[in-house]
Image (cartoon, rainbow, N blue to C red; front, side, top):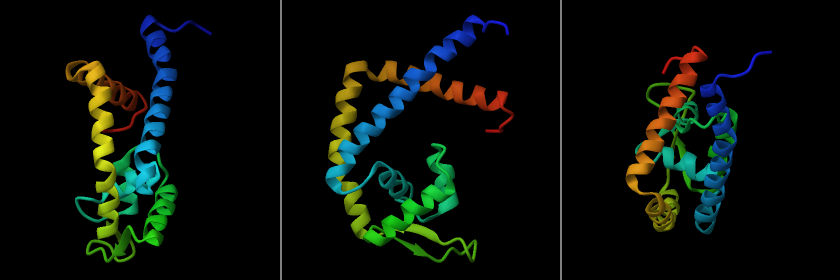
Length: 154
């Protein structure tokens, strides 16, 4: 078995810190969402519907974190049970109902808004907008390159 190229080594060295960053974001999301009574998954799913109802499959694609449709379905059902979302008829598809937030669901997301802004502003201030934009651009390029190599269209 041959050795990786220097670029392959650099990408491989990035993987574990990327997983650690994901874990850190999830921990921060738990701290932010918890006082509003939401889990990070509920926040993501509910947040995806704030601009209009979506089918569960659309939410799974939009959230884009590798969440299976079934996982999003369970989370959506939890939101409905709590009264934070509801299923409504979908004019484009008879069987795939749309999930939309209720006023209580919108209020739950609004309650965590100030905490999310404070966290983002504080973390962002430590790095600066310019450095974060460079990191974002790099991350998006890595995602696109990986998808091209795996034969997945953007």
